[in-house]
Amino acid sequence: MIGISDIEAAAHSIAGHVVRTPTVPSPGLSALLGAPVTAKLELLQRTGSFKARGATAKLLSLSQAERAAGAVAVSGGNHGIALAVMAAALDVKATVVMP
Image (tube, rainbow, N blue to C red; front, side, top):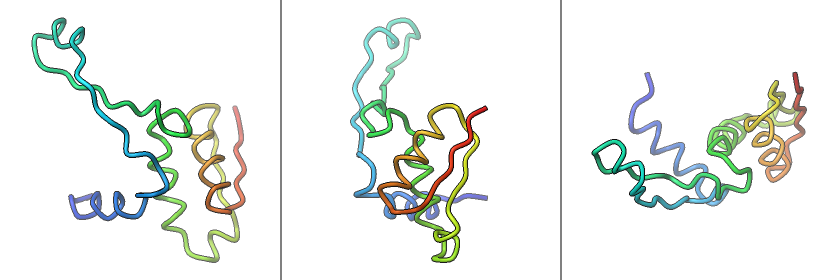
């Protein structure tokens, strides 16, 4: 089970590699739902989605041997983009297979 300490450790490891995206109130959704809604602007990530966080955390957790072997993703979307961009930034060979 993932605990808060695991989340804090991941956040610490990816700091500097991903954007700390802002949150903004959403008046339209708040009115529609009758409760305050805040949106997190993950579209401001270099990859355009929150997937950069997970891809970066995983790549940083790899051993030297695993990094040398490279990473593979099967994705025609945001995860593939995140792996490709973050692997390039971290100098890890990556292959993205699109369905």
